[in-house]
Image (spheres, rainbow, N blue to C red):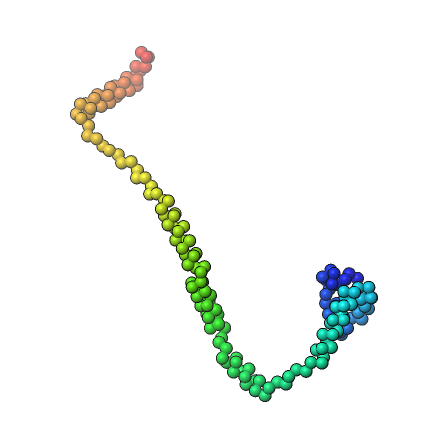
Length: 163
């Protein structure tokens, strides 16, 4: 048998030894272990002393007004919704009044301000400037377009044999 105290397993054997909860076979095996293990023997002796002290203790008598006081306390106690809401309110007060919430709010404000300052507006797309053309530029552009049109026509007519 492995020692319950050293292994940390089956510690209930120490508590159950000498009570009706422990079977005869378990008691015999544990008693054999007690002969060789000083730690378990000490624990069992301590458990016997506790049981003897509890046997000597006399509980005080119940007062005659016990039931009346019990029911009065039950009636005074708020129902679970009220207790729940009271607990939430208490937690909110602690968070709002305590040191943590103002510090967290200040930190959030600083982070938000930093992000807002760092974001630069997108550059405006370049606007197209239409410059007024001079009349001679228009004439040159029309001449160039006519020359390209004539060249294109000559290529289609078979003029590329000359090239």
